[in-house]
Amino acid sequence: MFERGLWATRLITLLAVVFGIFGATVLFLIASADILHVMNLTYQYFFASYHPEDFHADIVAEIIGAIDLYLIGVVLLIFGFGIYELFISEIDPAKEEENKILHITTLDQLKDKIAKVIVMVLVVSFFQRVLHTNYNGAIEMLYFAASIMGLAIGLYFLNKVGK
View 1 (cartoon, rainbow, N blue to C red):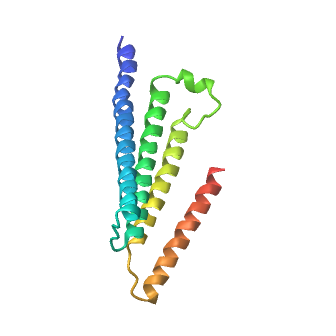
View 2 (cartoon, rainbow, N blue to C red):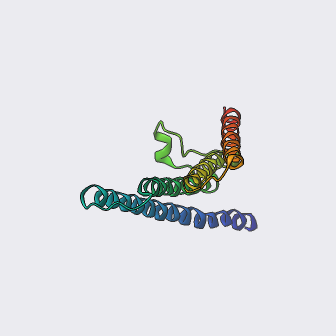
View 3 (cartoon, helix red, strand yellow):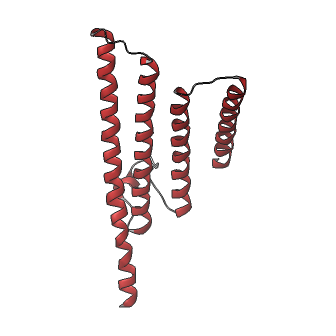
């Protein structure tokens, strides 16, 4: 009886699944609203003679911000699906499809998938911040180049380890 009760406590992970999926949905909606805002600004730029300073950099930064939110939403989706499959049950419709991107069989597999998406979130965030950075000398440009090189090397090794 104790073991049955202990085994039933795994169902508490449903909270993580439900709220993870809910969080992903919220992030997808917010990112989509950001893209709609960019579309509205673009319309004003072309048809209403609205030409603010740094328009292009602001538009690119907003689009990158939306991509960042989409990626974080993907992390939450992977997390929700993975927790469900690890602790509750395999998802039957997922077994029937050939695309196994959300199919998780081990905790290490879940961690690897989430880590890769989180690294991409960090790359996108880095790119977004770079757009609004002012460089006032050669040493700052050198730091900028070194950070891009470090990022590229890190992505290279992350890709090598994943294969």
